[in-house]
Length: 176
Image (cartoon, rainbow, N blue to C red; front, side):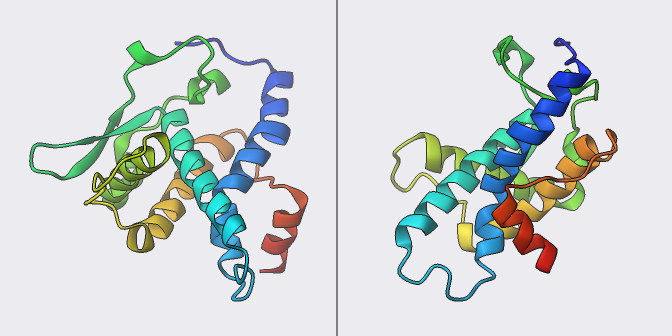
């Protein structure tokens, strides 16, 4: 078990760290709803998708989970190896909450595991033909929706909080 954060540290994480990271996670989803937003902005699109992929990986691991590939080729989630955990790693238990369980993702467990593995390879390694199991166009948005649901279920709801985003993205969500 790691050190539990103080109330002021928890407040800082919600207003600064989580607001920033949720904005990076969700930008691609919200901006994709604007039909003309990406036109002529390939650089912004590339940065947004990479940032979202990195945050996807970070949040799955923050919840206390990691993906693995079974001998059958199917993907699944399991508890993250705490042997690998450093004193500086921040996870749910720093907030006085239990780590997430694989079954929190219900029938979407394999999808989230497949996406976690795919985005991990796509952002951490320069690979070629290593993600034959991952189709970002098909898999990413449904997995993202599930991850956001579990983040809310395991972090925000137990602490009586709601998502905060950077102001420009927050305004887009308020209009929806």
